[in-house]
Image (cartoon, rainbow, N blue to C red):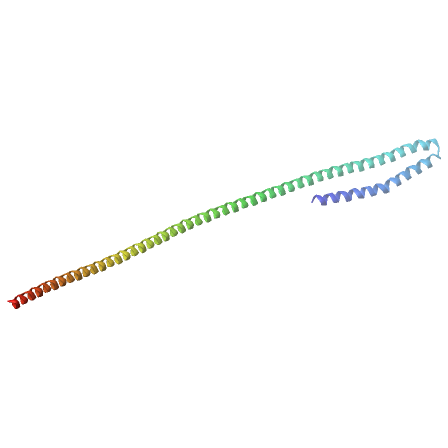
Length: 214
């Protein structure tokens, strides 16, 4: 809108300047020619020519003044248009800056929200890892306890087996010892019996000899 009015004012100004370019030479020629022609006439004619020249000059001054006033008005309008356009540009810049600030704030807010979400996710992940780690440690402890219990039970079984073997060995040794003792007793009894039998035989032999002597 401002550009259109500015263009219209510039066209109007150009038209007036063109008109002045055409009018001023004509007015100058007319004034110079009237002055040169009237200088040939009498003094009365000269007295009448002076007001005509004054009116022509006055007309030229009026036109120049009008042109100057119109130029001033155009300049004022241009200044107003420039001021308006500057204000509009300032408003647009302010709006753009405001939009940029809002956009930056929005981006910063989104970044903060994303960071908060990432931190929450990391915290949740850390908690899950910690829970998994605790559960894994508990499982490892249970497995270690089970292994220890199995080892203890295996050792107890081995001790029991060793004790059973030892008992069996002791029992076997005891049986063997008893058998040896019985054998020794039997041998002693047999020796005693054989000794008694020998004595009996000797006594019988002696008795037989005595009888024979008699």
